[in-house]
Amino acid sequence: MATKQPAKPPAPPVQSPRTDDGDALVVERQTQQVKPPQMYQVVMLNDDYTPMEFVVVMIQEFFSKDMETATQIMLKIHLEGRGVCGVYSKDVAATKVDQVLEAAHKAGHPLQCVSEPVD
Ligand code: TYC
Figure (cartoon, rainbow, N blue to C red):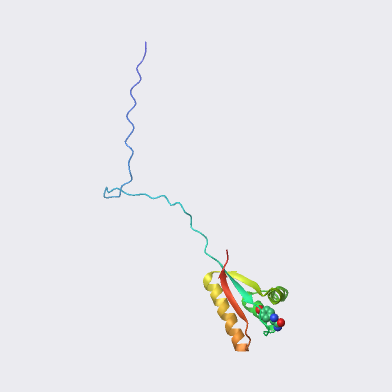
């Protein structure tokens, strides 16, 4: 004797999301993750007048490099025209530029440096 299976209850209707007041709620899927912040490199420029020793001291003092690393960076700038002293957030890079320019100006040297976005 064939037994009749009880009919399946109908699937409940798909509920669209609602607020507590019963209003329809639009749910958006966030497709893009938060990107890391743009970083900035502080680039020091060569000139013919600023003493090498002064540049080394600036790099040690404001970019926390040891004497050997600071000397290598200074020589790269001297030979190639420019060199990266460090990479920072936008505000910190701008502060480093200001500090170097102020110290150089006070010492009477034309040393220049700029901050630029890292690719
Ligand atoms: N070219 C300078 C000199 O011969 C030295 C120097 C190096 C200056 C680096 C600036 O960013 C600089 N005295």
